[in-house]
Structures are given as structure tokens and as C-alpha cells.
Image 1 (tube, rainbow, N blue to C red):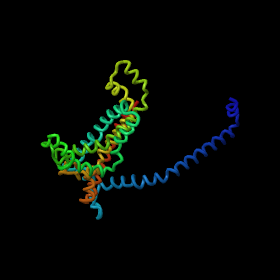
Image 2: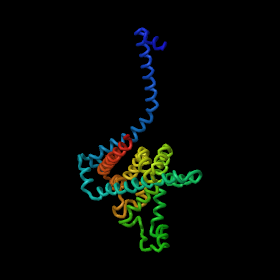
Image 3: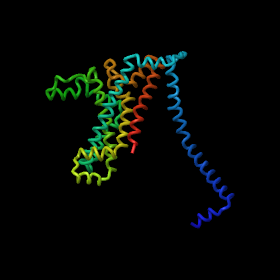
Image 4: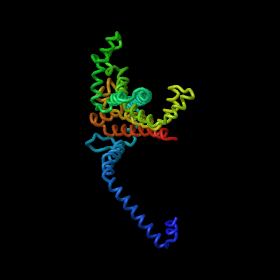
Length: 312
């Protein structure tokens, strides 16, 4: 109180001087902060914003990457919708969302819940390590490994034959009917551990008193999961969905190594088609239009997920 009284009794000139000093100090601190952030902002601008702007510009031109560019307006975007193979890549990407996102998040939630209840101590640590192991394996290596496993003479077919299911053996990644689901299985294997470990970490923050109160009321395992665990893990589930949906829509390395987009166009996704158009067919404008559409698609899908996961 004495200090407040002294402050209120200070002459106006002195108060204005103190405010000026505080404002000057705040401006210096803000300037120092921006100077620290400047290198990162420059790198982001050169390697992210500049290529993004150039891609948008190229999408309005017909260009082979070397010669002069010809303005075509929205023709490249119209072509994406008119050519079935290009539009099919976007449909395939949405099929991969089911395999890369919905299945890993659902299985990850169940797996994390089981581990939280059963896998404790060293066994729990070992289980989490094994589950997360696919995340540290390069995706190219994962594609090669699964290419061997799913080949005509691979381990999967050998196991089916040993179980008397030889009629179901096939080259899973070379069959028009099974190629895309087989790629999806690879995505589930890679992303399940990430989802399970992230959700398991979120479960450790939930107050145990909530579960005890639910058990007193007679709630079972499934009711606890749906009424306590899932609502309180909304943010973690949102992060899992965001990461996995982006992985599905922007998939390239796993698909390229495992199938190269084949057979035919069965597993082609926008990332593969953009690479083929830009570096094989030298259709820079069309590849840029498809890339811009892919970016817009990712934003349109991700924004509602982020909004729903952050609502209280």
C-alpha cells in the first residue's frame, strides 16, 4: 500500500517518464526476440513460402521446365478434373486416409487402453518400445521390407500356404484388387505405434478418481473408454488424426517404393503423380496445379479436425 500511494502521488512528468522507459525496454526486448527468430524466418521464407508461391504461379502456365512459359489460366486445374487418372489419385488418397488414419487411431486407442491397464513395469516399457519401433525405421526401408513380405514367394503367402489357405496366396502388391489395401496395411504398421504411444501418454494424465467413480456406478471397460477416456483425450486424438491424415494425403515414399503407383494406376496418389508429371513428363504447370489442389485438400480436411479437437 505505501508503494501504491507513492506511485499515485508521483508528479505526472515522473509517471510519463517511467512509462516511456518501460515502453522503450519492451521495444528493445521485442527487437531482440525478432532478431533471434530472423534466421528461422529467412529459412522458412526461402524454403517454404517462396516454393509455395512459385508453385501457385506455375500452376497457371503451360511449361516444360526449360522453355518459355505460356499463360493458360485455370486450364491445368480443369484438366485435373477431366483426366480420370489424375482424379483417381485423389480418390486413392482418401482411401488411404481410412488405412493410414482411422484404423491406426482406433486400434491405437484400444491398444493404449489395454497397455495402460495390463502392461506395467518393464513389460510395459518393452511393449511401448516394440510398438514404436516402426516409427524409427525409414519409410523407404519399411516399403522394401513389406515388398518382400507381400511378394508371391514372401512370408505372408508362405504362412497362408502352411495354414492350408494356399488358394488365397497372390502377389498382394501387384494385384489390382489388393494393391491399395496392402499399401494401407503398411501404413497401419508404421503409424499404429505413434498413435498408441501418444494416446497412452495422454491417459496417464487422466485423474484416476474419475475411473473409480465410474466403477462404483457399475461402468464397464467400454463405458469407461467412451465416457471418460475418449472425451479427455480429445486433444491427443486430434493430433493423431492430423498427423496421420497428412501422412495419407501426402504419401509418397512408401507407395513409390512398394508399388511405384501400380499396378496400372491402382495405388497412384497425388504425390506419385506430381513426381511423374514434373520430372518424367515435364508437365510443370499441370504438376503444380495438382500440388496446389493437394495442399488445399489437406487444409480443408485438417482445419475441422483441429477445430473439433480444441473445442471445450
